[in-house]
Every structure is written in structure tokens, then in C-alpha cells.
Length: 159
Image (cartoon, one colour):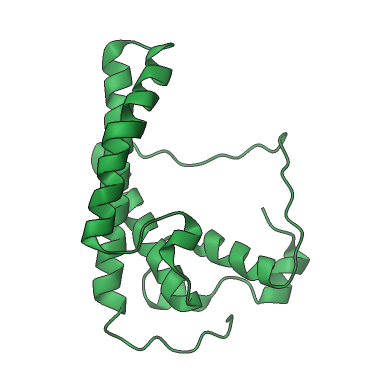
């Protein structure tokens, strides 16, 4: 959550996200801009966050696709490398390498951790969802790269 006074300092949400029908990463963008003015970020462990969980696999995949699209749009808008937000550049080879690392190294580890408290089928589903999440996110990044790299984005009033 953000203090209203701080949001006013940075001009609130950047309207370019709405203009270009980008439905994710506005919070990433605002946090980046708040950091840029030296705003103090704190962790509040007792805070309660309610987040809408998607009710179908299709909705889940679409949400993750939009997250990737939004993340890449934010990077284009602010002149950042996707690695700065913890993701590979929107290049198929880099993404394939990251997916392979996840499958070989991280997926078995996540399976074992989840399996220690859940049944086999739930642990498999959880591990598989992690892979699907990454694939959908990367597909969203590639989609945004294709869509927005061809156009000259207007100068954001929130730069």
C-alpha cells in the first residue's frame, strides 16, 4: 500500500498503462518511481492483503501473461532492463535457458518442499503451475516486446 501524500508526489498511476491497455505492473511502476524520489519502503508483517485468485487455469494463465506484458511495458517506459525486475530479457533464447534452469533445478526442489506437507498429485500440480506461470509470463513479455517496440511511446508525464 502507498501513502496518499506519496502518490500525489509522483502524480499517481501513469495513464499510459490505461492508454495502451496494459493491465498489470502499475504497482511495480509506482514503486520504481517512489524509489526515484527517495521514498522510504517498509515491510509491515501484520498487514493483511486480499488478492483475487483466479478460478480457472485459463484465468490464471491469462493473469500471468498480463503480468509479463505489464512488466515489459514498464521496462520500456522507464528505460530499464527486465533483469532489473528479476526476469530475463525478452529474448527467446534467454527465456528458454531460464525455463530449463527452473525445470532442472527449481522445480524438483519446489516439489520436494510442497510434497513434505501435501499429497503427490497436489505437489505435482503445484510444481507444474510454477512452470506454466513462467511460460505465460515470458509469453506476455514477448507479446509486449512485439507490440510496443515498434512504436514510439509518448513521453510519460510520470518519467
